[in-house]
Image (tube, rainbow, N blue to C red; front, side, top):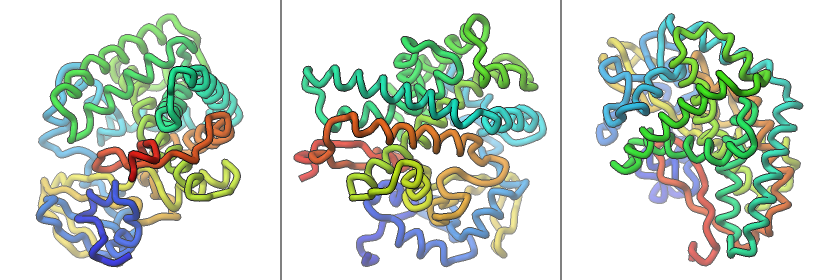
Length: 368
C-alpha cells in the first residue's frame, strides 16, 4: 500500500480498510514517538508495548481522572469499580479471582452454551425474514447478540432475559466511547443501573451457575464492586468478542475457507478486534530511552504486534481474562453461521471507534 493511502494517524487506523502496513511501519520504531495532534506517545514496537504494559508507573487511567469526566450516575459508579480499569493492591485479589474463574470454565460448557444461544438467535432472525429482515441486519443482530447473550447465560440469566440484558450492555458500552453523544451518555447511565439491579436480583434469587458461584465467592471489597465486575464480563464481550466474530465473518466474505477453530486463531492474529489501548504515566517514566513526563499518555498499538500474544487481547496485569472463552464463543457462532441467509449481497464498514475494529454489515448496494 502506498503511504498516501495510509491512515491519518494511529487512531484513524482502527477503522481504515487496511491499516496493517502502516502498523508495521510504526512497529519499526522501538522508542515512543510523540503525536502532537493526538497528544499521545505512540508505541507499536512489540518489546516497547510490553514494557509499557508491565511498567508499574503506567496506569490504565489518569491519576487525576480515574473515571471519565463525561460519565455520571450509575455509569460512573459502575466504571469506577471495574478491576480492569483500576490499578493497585485493592483490586489485585478480585482480579486474580476473576481470571481464575474464567480459566476454570470448562471449554465444553462454553461451547455448548454458545452453540445454543447462536442457534436460538439464528432461528429468531429466520422467523423475522418474512418481515423483510435483510442479510446485513441479520448479520449485525447475530454478531452483537451471540457473545453478550452467551456470557449472560453462563452467569445464569434465563433465556427470556437475554435480549434485554444484551441491549442494556450495548447502551452502557456506547456511553463509554469518547465519541458518545449526550443522549448516549444519558441512556448509558440508565442502562448501567438496570444492569446492576438485574445482577443483584440474579445473585440473590437466580440459579448459581458454576461461573456465578465462583465469582460470588471471590474476595470482593463490597457488593457493588462484585456486581460491577459481573457486568464488566459482559461489557468486555460486547466489543472484543463481537469484533472478533465480525472480523471472522469478514474473512469468510473475503474467501477464507478454514474451519471455525482455525479461522478464529488466524483472525485473532491477522485482523484482531482491539487495535490499541492507552496507558497513563503516573510519574515521570523512561521508556526505551525516552523520558515521558507524568500525566502524559501512551497509545499502545496492539494490532502492530499481530501473531503475538498481545494481539487483540492485551498483555500483563490488564490482559483480557476471557481469551479462551472468546475463542470458544466465536467458533461456535461460526458453526451456526450457515443457518443464516446467504452472504453474497453483504458488504461492510467499520463502526466509529478509537480502539475497536468492529464491522457493521450493510447491503452491498449501500457500499457502491
